[in-house]
Length: 357
Image (cartoon, rainbow, N blue to C red):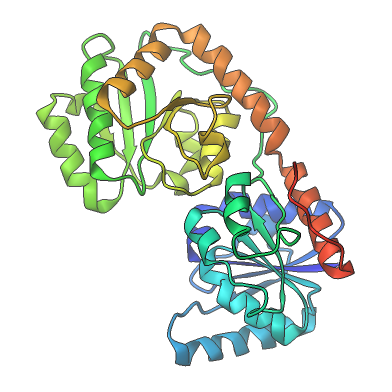
């Protein structure tokens, strides 16, 4: 079986490591893979032996047709059995290619917005399966797509054989990552206020904040007002610089964005002690099995959760290691590869694709 995996700009930029591991996992499962990536993105040398077809993303009606034609001509020699689109920015082109190549298409769904934008099969007959990343997204997809077409495929991550030892030098320094992309300014400010509440007792704590450009100035000003600038640092996009930030001890997710991504799951697999606002559309942030969940982004809640971790490092390690085991059981790359391979097979054979219970 030959699967054509198509990703959009956002996935190509932020999920490069995940995509490479997914390709390798499918190859290990006995599939052949061809990659379709935005032409602006460089090739990944780790998977350069798999065919790469650059395409031109475009939202302009007159250019979409030419972009699809070019991608179809480049894909023709490979004749895929299945087209799998990852990232809503690739859906339109992927569905058109599937129609041209007379094969079924699968759409990955990683966010609430994507779940609500899934096209109805009656309007898009080439749609063969919808692949939400968690059960809550599957329920949302079921509003527009027959349930037998929906297959939950949890995002797979690499789980290192040896756990990262968090809080190993707690008396000297503690690195905390604030994954604040997509979070409103008020949520970011609540984290800074919470830091100010624990800072007098834990001067060794430094928060490295990854924020949207629109809220950076406001957050820096708030850190100054709370006298914690010495313990607050703005850092580049953590999703593009994972290796460094995944060596930190604590991860903060300050808002429910309704979106899944591999970074949060990978952090728990390292493990990192995670504190997050409950997110109904992200399974690892909707249960206290893998993270310390707070209901609302309030300064007192952040301060309480941070103080509990910093005051009991051994307890924090034990809890983080339990989360790591949970991730290994539910979000391994091998599980993801097996689910994708079996779903592709059922799409081709006409078998139903059922939501896992």
